[in-house]
Image (cartoon, rainbow, N blue to C red; front, side, top):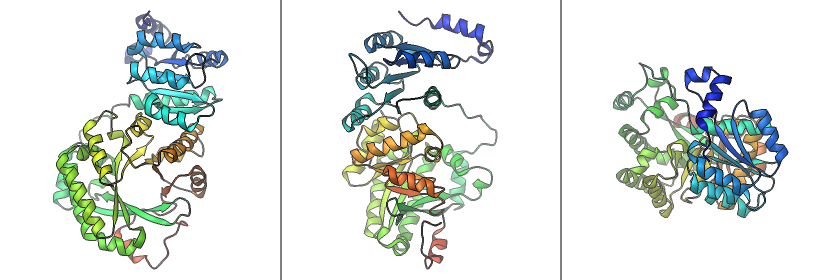
Length: 414
């Protein structure tokens, strides 16, 4: 029998009359676990924030899901259950309700199960049991907020692609280099090229500037300008970084979908390699959808040519794990906020530790950015992160500034 959402909304208006004014409804969550005590605690503690439908029988839960899939906002399943394990249940759920995010609860997960959870169950998060209600609530809120991001308020003076194009016309942009370090011994292993737009940054943040044009032809124009500049400067990169001469370059999903621009990226890679400088490309996770066939085809083409494409800001969206199942990316770069939370947030800490194991088994590189202290370095080294960058290790500098300081050893002491 379908879930009586109309009746539920009526009861919500009685209990929370403000919801009728703003049009809010509480998320509906299907939770399957054979621990009735946990389910009871969840219903008792979180019923004011979410509407839980709980089952101890996965087969009964799946039957309910089939009849109510259009009304569900999140699915949570325990790994160990009678008749059908959590991964098996979530695999069926993924086929029945592919757009509904999924969380797996687990104590110990084997490497085979981890791969199955990523490639087939396409889980959004994995929480280590025993899990507290507070940790579960935090995970639910994060997943649902990511699934339904709040719209940005419109402003009359917002940044526009035309403003970015005008800045390019004025040559009002410059590059800086952020050094990258091998996690095992903190030796220099390359740099990341970052773009700065001084005039526009007097009024807008750099992330806001790129957000305004990432899906507009102007982003191709800006990236082309930066690549031409990098080809000219390649001998200086080589002299500066020597055997560690490798530069990471950010590209937009919009650019990767363009076959002509993809050819430009490949030619740029070859020209840089001829000059003794390696290149890796990074695309932000929030710009990628798991069914973006044009982008995935381009990623496959790059991989066939031996060109590494990494997922940047990994963990910032709902598609993190699902993207890995395509096996076209060479590695990931963890989201800055995720890294910043591992010292104080159990959920972030558990996710980073788990995804590091996953990447190790899949043969993927895993980088952490936003490193601000020694404690973060030591924890990420234990987890097996392969590469680090951040202000603690070395902040962004212009090529000229780095060359001027080359007589002073670049070290992790910052």
